[in-house]
Length: 147
Picture 1 (tube, rainbow, N blue to C red):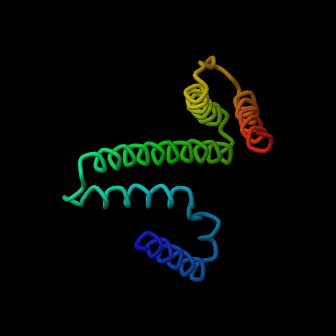
Picture 2 (cartoon, helix red, strand yellow; picture 1 turned 135 degrees about the vertical axis):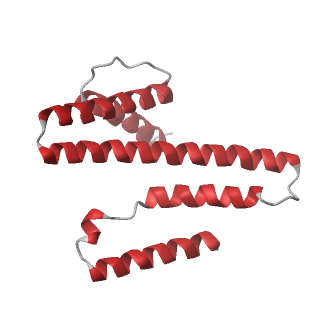
């Protein structure tokens, strides 16, 4: 209930900011994934604050908290790298675009490699790594649709 109330308050504050300055909607959109993951971290921290938790339940919440923190950090890194690329492209600075793209590709390749247990070569293009992600998504969707 507290999580829902916090999210509603955040959304109301954002709606008020948009009313006062409509450009806010284009530049400061709330990230629902980040909100969800942040609430997940907060919920697990609240649960761990209970001194009466038995040791097994405490270990479970500790693992859930670490997992939620890792997912939040990954999401924030991913979002920041995509934003860096967008800003670099807006600047039209070729070196800045190349650097931002290289950072993003290296991150995505490492992340996908970890998921698949593979190692992807350095120097891949953004298009090439995105194609690998599209293939992975197609496999996942195919396994869900036709089990």
